[in-house]
Length: 158
Image 1: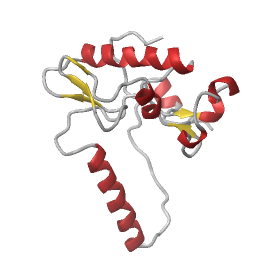
Image 2: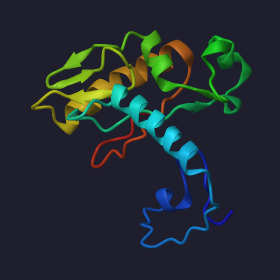
Image 3: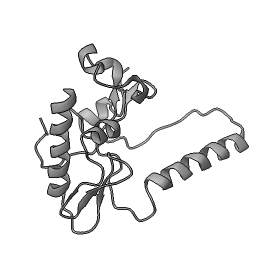
Image 4: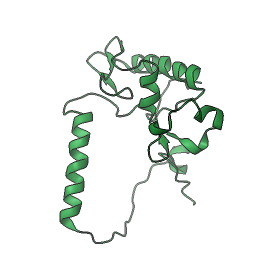
């Protein structure tokens, strides 16, 4: 409770604090099962983030569905809600983000929440392309996407 943990959030993040040391108490698991799970996750990540790709990861956070009013949820097909979350990529895809480009920044043609620097792209380019789709998602769904990346010396989108 003191840490204020939430979906990709904590009191540490909100207050600009850095964790310098932690102690974990782990349970023993089945090494073969854990290795298999790790390999599956790695394979999936390498498909989404090929080696050498220059990107900050997913640009926007997914949305926790039960935090939205019903009139907004009605605009989202129920099959798009995964584990109680609406993937930001689904909303971005709905407004045409896949494959869009601005200067050296491109939105991946295979994942609408993956902003890639193809060379020469600047933070301002990321920001301007992301802001465009932040506004389009808001216009269509009434949802304000929250950046997963930290915007430094840049204004919030809203």
